Length: 178
Image (tube, rainbow, N blue to C red; front, side):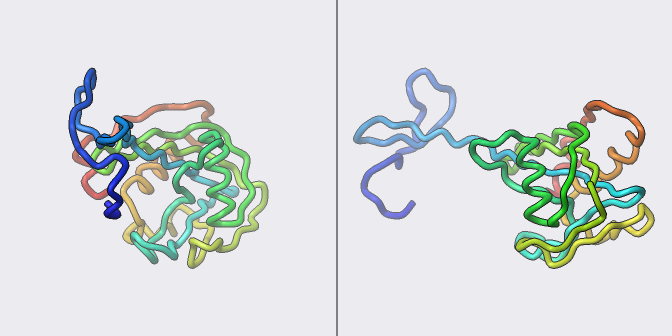
């Protein structure tokens, strides 16, 4: 808290609710803290995968797919395309939803799309140290930023040539690294 004497600052269970929330003692406003939505894409050019080396914390200098927080007033697909542009300056066409990862430990939901690059052109955006197109055997597996990057890459490879969404469950204990 900022020390502001007003606003939601008392944690209690509001009437009709089932969990503690921050409530304003003066006006009764209830602050609902909800999970963040992360959107991103596994992008391919021919037989290569687009990865970005993070220029920001957390996990600076580790490799990831282009992904980030969804913004207000955009669809999840628009957010994924925006993130690809912001982080890798690549233009893509989304093929479909690849995976949804629920990660309650950090209050996030990840929606990862499959996308085809419209050209091999890419370069680092402000949040990337470098970007690269990697053949499967060249992917820096030991230097991936998060487990969901590997999950998504493997899932995309399993679906090569298929269309449509093929949901995949991820064991709860697999989320520990996130």
